Image (cartoon, rainbow, N blue to C red):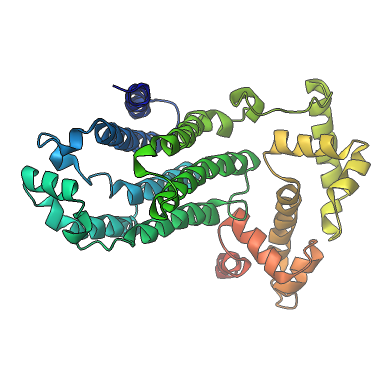
Length: 368
C-alpha cells in the first residue's frame, strides 16, 4: 500500500477521534460542539472514501454501494458551518428555515438515484465503463452548481455574522479565521475540480489537493476547540501560538490604569459626540500611541475602536430618544447630535447593538 494512502488512513483515524471528542466536549456550547463533531466525522468518511478509491476497493462489489455517497456531503459542510457559527454567536438553535439546507442534498440524491438503486455488480460495471453520468440525472457540469453553493455558504455566513452584525472584537477575529479556513477548503476543492475538468491534472492525483484540504479542515476544527476560550476573554496569543504579536511594552498594571483613564475621558469629555473623532485623537487625549490605545480597547472592552465609540453614541441616542416625547426632535437630528455622519450609519449601529431600529425602540417608550 502506498505511503500516502497510509497517511490518509491516519488522517481518517484522527478526524474520527476529533469528531468524537467534539461530541463529548463539555466546554462551550453543546449543540455547537455536536455540529462541528458531525462535520469532522463526515469529512473523515470522505477521506476514507478517497482511500478506498485510491486502493481500488470501489471496483470490488463488496464496496460498490459506497460509490458516489460522498457527493451530498459537499453541500452539507457549508450548512453545518453556517448553523454552527449562528449557534456560537446567537445561540438560536435550529430553526424551521434550516430545512431549506436539506433541499440541495435531496436534489443530489434524487438526481443520482438511478445509480444508487443499482445492484453492486451493475455499479462496478458502470464505473469501469466510465458511463456514470449516462446513468444519473445529474448533468456533468452540475459540479459547478455545487461549487457555487459552497462559495455561497461561506459568503452567507460571513455576511450574516461578520463585523457589521457582531460587535465583539474577539468574536469577529475568530470568525474571520474560522470562515477563512472553510473558504480555503472550498477554494482547494474548486482548484482540484478545475484542474481535472480542464485536463490539467489527472484525477488520480487528487491526494495532493486533499493534503491542502485536510490542513484547512484541521484548522477549522482547531478554531472550534479554542472558540470557548477566546470568547471567555483569553487573548489570541494565548490560545493560537502561531499568531505573532509585537511586544507592546505595556504592563498589566499600566493597561488597567489606562482602561480607567479611557473610561473617565469618555464619561467626562464625551469625545464620541464629535463626528470627526479618530483613533489618533483618542490616543492623543490618553497620551498613548495609536497601537497602545487600540490594544486597551480590544483587550478590555472586546470592541474595535469604531464599535467602542459607537456604543457610547448609541447609549447617548437612547437617552435622547427617551426624552424626545414632544415630537420636535427627529431621529435624524439625534443621529447627528450623538456623532454620526448620516442616518444610515446610525441605524446600522443602533440595530447592531440593540437588535432593533431606533423606530422600533421608540414604540415601547411611547406606549408606556
